[in-house]
Length: 77
Image (cartoon, rainbow, N blue to C red; front, side, top):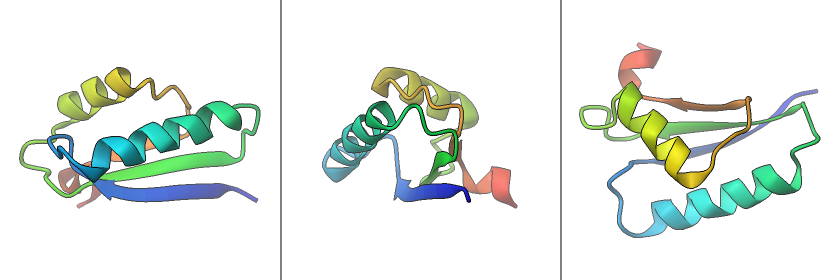
């Protein structure tokens, strides 16, 4: 069984999004030995949040889980 934690956010969010992502990184770090745990982060601002911006954001927050996927709407269509 594979378990995903899903969130919707945008990289320029100044309020709850950074808090959510710091909390998700804590979960990532606490359960890093579980290969069946993944994260799916979907931006609600795909015009600004390009693949490059999402990658930089992930690096900034210390997102290292190989099963953490950040997606923009353009990637899903």
